[in-house]
Length: 552
Ligand code: GLC
Ligand code: CA
Image (cartoon, rainbow, N blue to C red; front, side, top):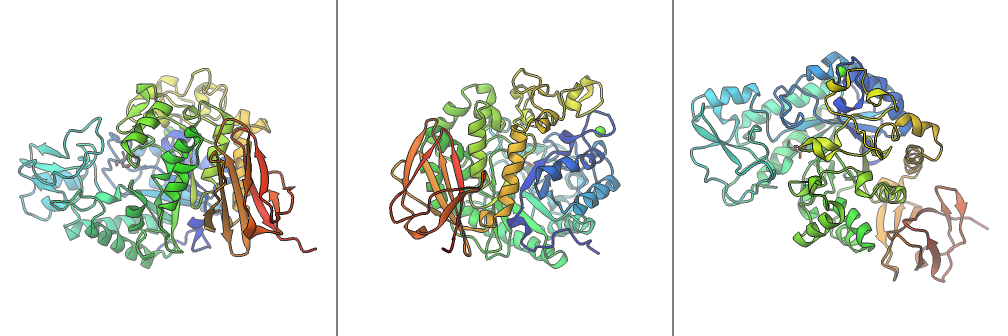
């Protein structure tokens, strides 16, 4: 029987603040150089004090780790480097006791080529149910209209298998064969995996790479109706077992295409807003609100029970798939002049280095992340302004050990430094001696303390996350201003996207008589009148105002 999750609120994910982390990078309790579940358990105090309400764990299952665990060889176990299933259970119970939800990865699209399903398939007779767990072809000529995603490392979506004497289909690395959802047995297997983790008590799944589940000749093999039918079946199954179980779609697509993953509220409850992410960076570099406003205006309404997942950075490169060619060139010019920072179509850098380690720019980007409509996802380490190491290969440069103190190995592990799964960041600006949790806990004006405050404030006002969005159109385009409304509550957000002081006149005729109270300092501003509301904002400054009705 499923164990009850800790979420009392059926729409918990709409009010959540999510913290994304790889178990291997967080804290190493047994000193073997690799982070583990007992280590994560020890650090729950830190996570609770940060104020986030939900953890999203990157893949922690048995795997040859050729795609950092997205190449799974056993869906129902824990990679021995990270601990045991019992360690996972202990961690999950402890997280739930603290009212933290836990979302794990469900990699539906593909397995590792080491998975027993693939090993059996390649040896099974062509046409058998076992062979058809995957997608095969005698020639490389099928599904020619499907793009290649890992353009730096793969030349084709087909790879020859000498055992099967056939080509198998893969949208990602050639060691990650795609599962075949035209075979109903495959979905049955996946539903068993879902039950396994739901019964342990997880609160939701991030559905990795969902647009690619089904292939059809003559299409791009993305977002097909048959793929949505599979996802609806997954949702029905989850819903029946754990009604509060949340599905988060990873669909790196345009808003109109992502909209379909919410369906009528009967598919995924959440989906990432991929196109917004680069536009937050673009708007800030251009010092113009246009890219942000435009993409939000193109974003269709979603069902009441659904929610966008917003992020600035994650474990992958900053993807530039959902921008035009011109915009991509611009982003590379602005953010990855150093070619070492580029991978596939994106930029493999963390937040702080992307913005030149400028504290005001970090704060401004977070103010957007935490106030635009959706649930914010914070990537581990970005709350202390961690740096990256673009020389580590693939996307490993943004997956280095969490920096706890200025001691050896950043106090991530007691292992010999040579034994760590990855070197810690050591450069003079972002190195662990300067950037670490301990130092920032002692410093009242550190980024960490600022982030804790912001997260706490965000949780006080349901208009964040659940409110409706209306942009204002002041003449000064360096200013981004919007009103969030939730029932009788209203919040006004004003951000200066530029490096210099800016004046702005806002027409707030719908808010006349209300008193704006600046939320970070709890400071009263003049009552809104029929006149344009005049504000000045410092470089990269932003205001969040609660609009209070004061009866005289
Ligand atoms: C998703 C993951 C990425 C992984 C890929 C293939 O895009 O975020 O890290 O490499 O799927 O599984
Ligand atoms: Ca360990």
